Image (cartoon, rainbow, N blue to C red; front, side):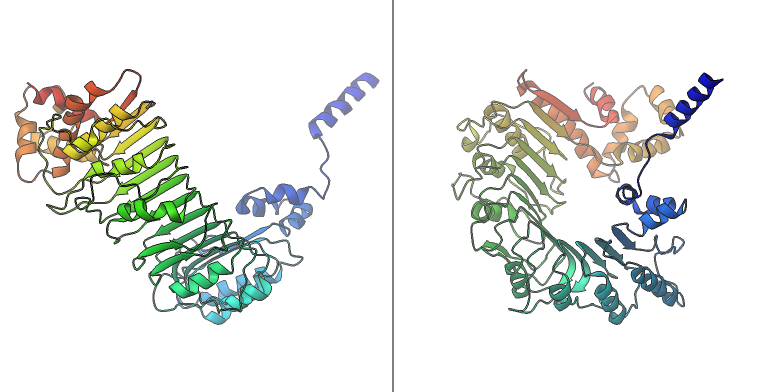
Length: 495
C-alpha cells in the first residue's frame, strides 16, 4: 500500500507539472492574442489580474461587440463611447504599451471625445494607431502638442484619415522609430518639420497623402532604413539633403507619375546609395522615350533585390520598351533577384517574333555574374519582352532559375464556362472527352465577343514554347506557369 500511495503521489505530481508563480502569469498572458487573453481572464482571479496588465488595448467594431456591424447605428454611439471611457479608466499602472483606436465606423464622432481618449492613453505608451472614417466631412486635427508633451515614449505612430500639422520649432519626436500616414492631410513643409525633428526614425510609410509635392529627407535621419510611398498623387520629387546611408529598403508605387523608372534610375542612387531592396510600381511608363544606350547616372552598388511593376492596360500606340530595363541590370553589379510584373496592353502584338532582329545594344556586352533568379509575371508575346529574356539568358552567367508566368486570374474557369455553354454541355470533362476537332474552340476564339486576354495568354504560351525554351541553358531551371487548358489546346492548334 505504501508503494502504491507513493507511486500515486509521484504520478499526480508529474501530472500537475511545474508550479507557475503569480509574477509569471502576466508575461504568459501578454504573449496571447487579445481575445484569447480576455477569455483566459474569465477562468480565475489570478488570470483576471494578469489580464489587467495586458500590454495592448484595441477599440474596434469587433472588440466593442458591434455584432458584425461596420457602422455605428444611430442612438448607440453613446453606449460605445461609454465603453471606451470605462476601459481607459481601468488602465492604471502604465501596463498598456500599445493602443489601437480603429474608429472608422464612428462617422459623427466629435473631436472632443478623441482628444479626451488620446489624453488618457498617450502617457507612457510605445505604439499608437488612430484610424478615423475615410470621408471628407470631418478631418480631425491630431494634437501634435499633446504628442510632444506627453508622448515622448511613443516609438510607433500610425494615423489614418486625419490632419497632422506640426508647428515649427515647438515639436520634438525624438523616440519615434516607425511612422505610417495614410490619407493624412500634411503639406510638404509640415512633413519636412516632422521628419527633421524625428531623429530616431527608422521606418517611414506614406500613402494617399495628396498634399505632399516634394518629399525631402533631411540630413538628421541617419537611421532611416525603410521608405515606402504609395499613391501620393501630387508628389513630384524625392530629395535627400544628406547621406541616407542606412536607407536600404525603398518601396515606391505612385501614379500618376510620368516615367517613374527613369526618375529612379537617375535620382535614387543619390537618395539611397546603399539600397538593397527596391520596389517600383508605375502606371504611366511610356518607355518609348527612354534612351536605349546605357548612361551611368549612378549605380546601385548594394542592390540585391529589384521588383518592377508596370500597371496597365495602356492605350494603342503607348508601348513600353522593356529592353530599357537592361539599364537597371547594368547599374546593379550585385543584383541577385529580378522580378517584373506586366499587365497586358491594349495594343495588338503579332504572334510571329523574329529573334534575328535583336537590337545592337542587347548583344552580349555585359556579364551579370550575380543574377540568380528572374521572374516575369503577366508574360506577353511582345518582341521587346522576348528580347529582354534573350539578353538575360545570354548575359546572366550565374542564373539558376527563370520563371515565366502568363496566367490570368479566373481565366480557366471563365473560359470553360463559355465553351461548355456554346457546346451545349454542362460538364467540361464531358465536353473535352467528346471533342474531336478544333472547330468549336476556334469559333470561340475567332468571334468578336471573345475576351482578348484569353487569346493573348495562348499566344504568350506559344511564344514561350517556340522561342524561349530552346535558348535556356541546361544549368538553368525553367519554370513555366500557365493554364492547364492552354497546355491541352496547344497541340490542337498545331494540327
